[in-house]
Length: 130
Image 1 (tube, rainbow, N blue to C red):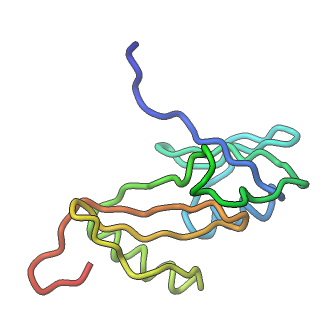
Image 2 (cartoon, rainbow, N blue to C red; image 1 turned 30 degrees about the vertical axis):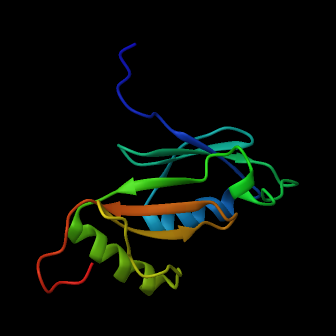
């Protein structure tokens, strides 16, 4: 098999418009295509399929379920710092950056509770915070 890259990630959401507004405001994603109950959003490199499921509820305990737990978007160290400032400006909450030993990551939740990780493998310069 000659796989090139992930084409898109599918997310069940309660309301397409609410989810699109979040992904547009936070990540700058545009609508790529609309079907009746599914919208493809993203940019030239990243796409999410938003599947409308108005009666869906969250997984009770994701740590005890077979599930995809989160989606991670990789960015440069400079963009990682800028993203934190942008999220604060938008009022999107996140914990301080986590140092995993190989990368720095922050996590945000979308309107349906899907965890989105922003990560960089760029180490900060000496004396510089992540």
